[in-house]
Image 1: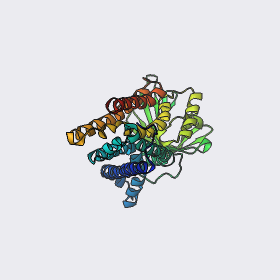
Image 2: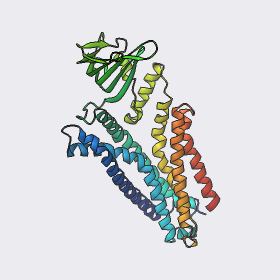
Image 3: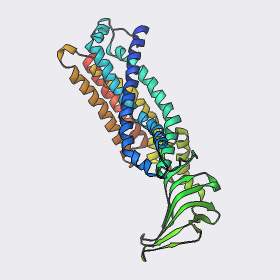
Image 4: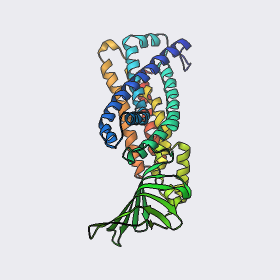
Length: 365
């Protein structure tokens, strides 16, 4: 057995090129199919807004595609691993490499290094592109696909407590005293928590006396009557600072911005387990690509003529997809407080790294 981690430079480049080309080919295929299906399901809502047309459909595609790339890149790495290794096995190239004295780990080393590069690229792409697209798409969707909000700090579906009452907004933009809400609804509740009055307003701005609702319309629940009111001020104790930390979407914030949001929420005495879990997952999620060559390695070894190549490929695929299921389940349990955030984000990664290594050593080393 050779003790160098990588094979020769020529063989390393050959394996890495095969793996990377297949990864991005599979990714393009998946994104094209899924984006087409997603657009078919959402195009009716987009075109329902007066004036929307082909341009708005393309806008949706440009905002949605980065999300699909980020979500399905690890799946593409898994499928590419199985395709690459199964092809090498079927062409007896793996047998030739092992006959030359290479270990199973050395055969996989170029793929693992390439997967690490893909993971780093994925992390940078998520931080610079996906977060911004997610924030804009969420705000646009909350506005029923009206004009795309130009403010990058737009947040959607904000829910606030005003003592016993409730204040909600479809979108919130700006900061400090210049903060502005769109699609506002204020619910007055009695001592028993029953809604007695509902006030809707298209826009609300902050004044020293509270939130000023423009063109408000009141609905009296008990009398079932609707009344138009003069500009109304509500929630005087709910200042801009509380609004800014009330709705934090981890998917639309970079890891640095999310750190600041978590610190602000902790200072306000808020629970941050869910956000902390997602903070850690911003790192462990892209690194899942590094696991895929290890989990799919079972497809590389064994004689192709034995008729077990398909079974080995299915086992590798099953290991990879099981990882994604366990990863999502652990993150969900962490959100509910079942696991500490660090364990929820990293336990599946470490567990399947050990599983993949154990299978590889047991069967090939």
